[in-house]
Image (cartoon, rainbow, N blue to C red; front, side, top):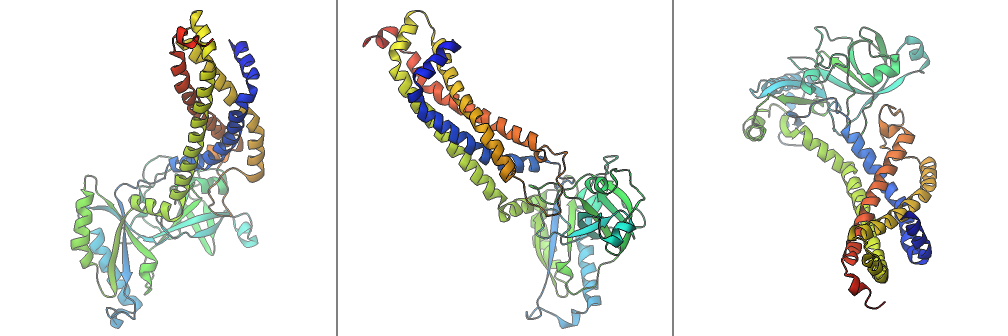
Length: 436
């Protein structure tokens, strides 16, 4: 059968020429639009390193001095600090709250802020300002039960259990698995010293890699603590309250109660309750604001357009071909060929056309990938991709997108071929041979 099909394709090469050219173009185009979808989806699938369920950010605002609500008698650092502590107690003493933390405004996932630092493994590199690892920095205030590790449910890389704060937090730091391996090529580094800026810190724990953005990859991360809040009048711009609700709490009822009853209680001094935001909502909002959502929508739209073109092209081509070959189909039916056999022959023809076109496009795709690079989410100029993730390996990345593109094209092409061919194959031999 294969020899007959190849002979048939060669004899009808002019009729097949335009659909073959379309397959060439769409094969190249489809790979380029699926590549970003693959990367963003693969990044999204990476474990966050924390549990977002039941996590909320309580934003506190401060009245401007030009606003009539501003109280100059409460403008000193010490008075603001007292007022802020009162607000903190109201928040973390709520019966629905299990854990809480006073975090820096850049120290929670999908926040609008991001802060980096240089971490050194030895003093020689520190003095020479070389051999450092660029890391993201989270910070929180360990006071009145504030505990970022428990609130985010950050896992110990060795035990898989939630990390615990030591009794003494001054001079201690927690680092991510990626940062530990970059600095020491190991995660067994508890008690070792690291250096950042003018600080010497002891590693108190190593946690699983942690994602700051859902559609990005984990960045080397260091978590540091402060024993007290800085008494700045700009405190709301530096700190946020992060709370984790107890299991079983009705979140919709909690949100309603917080906004109606708790929020007004947080207007103390020059501070006021600004908003209560859910972590999952912040993730969606950041994806929209950063353009990731629109990027995915565009890529899906382009993919759909390409597949629609292929589908219509295959339907049109094989509709014409099956009508033109009605006599051939009639002869095959008259000598005992089944409908299934005829349909299978046409499907194999479509498969050969698509596969040949796709194979011819592969060298151009490889050249495109090597010249322009594979799609990657821009994070930071210091970012070193983790080779443990498949999307960071050129060969695997290129191949998996190639396979996905081919399979999608193959399914659409076979469906587009099957519809007109099965109609033609049902024609009775006498009807097909009437004009013979």
